[in-house]
Amino acid sequence: MTLYLVVPALFLAVVLQASAMPHLRVWGVFPDLPLVLVVTWSLLQGPRGGLVWGLIAGLFVDLLSGTPAGAATLALGAVGFLAGQARRTAIRTQLLLPMLVVVASTLLYDLILLLGMQLSGRTVLWLETLGRIVLPSALLNLLLLIALYFPLRALHRRVAAQAIGW
Amino acid sequence: MTRKRLRSLLPFLLFFLALAGFVLHRVGWLEPVEKLVVQVSAPIQGGITALLDRAGALTQTARDLQDLRARTEELEAENARLLLENVRLREVQVEATLCRDLLSFAQERQAFDLSGAHVTARVIGLDPSNLERYLLLDAGEDAGVQRNMPVVTERGLVGRIVEVGPRWSRVLLIIDVSSSVNALTQSTRASGLVQGQPDGSLLMRDIPQADSMSVGDTVFTSGLGGSFPRQILIGQVTGVLRKDSDLYQTATVEPTVDFSHLESVLVVTGFAQ
Image (cartoon, rainbow over all chains, first blue to last red; front, side, top):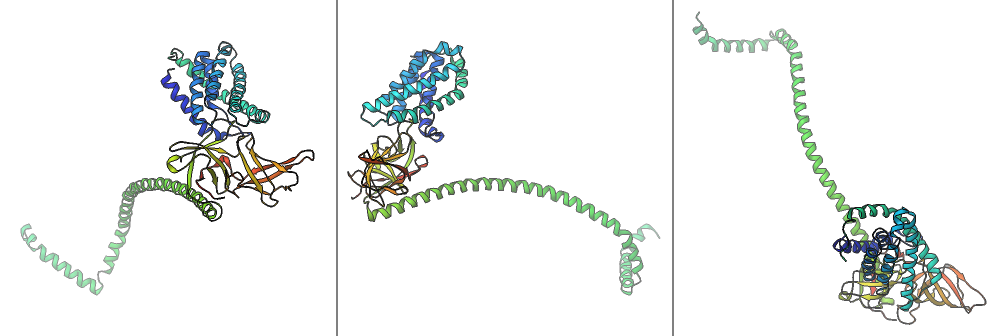
């Protein structure tokens, strides 16, 4: 998939995340669409594609959110790259590995963001945030992944011949 | 009598018959003949009339059907237009109610605690992250919005401006973990610091042990520190956590503002303490 499509698609995902997703709030949290998209695509495309998707999505999240500048870019880039490492195993294990990867990715992503917030001098209540925000949102991301994984896999098969122009 | 002669006499004959018929009718001698004719012709007439009525009704029905179709189309178009109009008016009504509430809040406060202009800003987005609680407003520097300005609704304190663009601004909500507001309870005047919690609730901490706290008491801004105007409603005390070994007591506070359904807010561009 070319960057001409990836960039607007990820921008749209981040805009949806900031406008529509907060209305799907359950247990005080809502699913993270850009994160789930990056994880899913990384599992299908591999580390390189995952890194590109993560960096682009992270950049948009940084621009639209109040997180310390660069924290989301770094976090989603890392998530995309690391999730992409599990690509070959993911193909064999159907949905089980993607489910585990999205939970681990949510933890990693939120931990990097929290660290960034702490380093920028903001108040971080680590334990409360982990228990009340990070874990419930990991569960919601898991549900979102189940909904998105197979449609995205079908899309990936259609565009598999095209490589990201990086 | 030739046919030609008969033809020439026909008008006179008809005239004579008409005159005779008139006279015979006047004297009543034609009545039996008339009755007979009517008796014979009546069913035929009735049949023809019914037939014509049916035919007329049929054509009328076709015409009516056509008219009805046209009317239905008109009414459907009208209905769609009215439906849209209704939706638009309801939206206007909701907006008007919101604006009226905000205006009345502003007017009440203008004489009491606040002064200066207020910018009614529309909420255009929320923070995409679960870890932080921000709002994006569609009013910025062009509308006189500046950093650290308090943001309120008629229901209470929303937060403060932390970032401003030409036509947008970002609001840090009071329920964000990074937010802290100097507060006071209404009845006991207990003072403390209201802080956001990760789950979106509020905690009032650093309340001196000597201060009396009660569940149900309302919490207002104290105005201490000058960041927020005095006496802006924050929430209601829902629980008090007090340990004799601690220097301070803590209270949980339920915010009065419904942060998940914010539509319009006021940015307080100036206030007097």
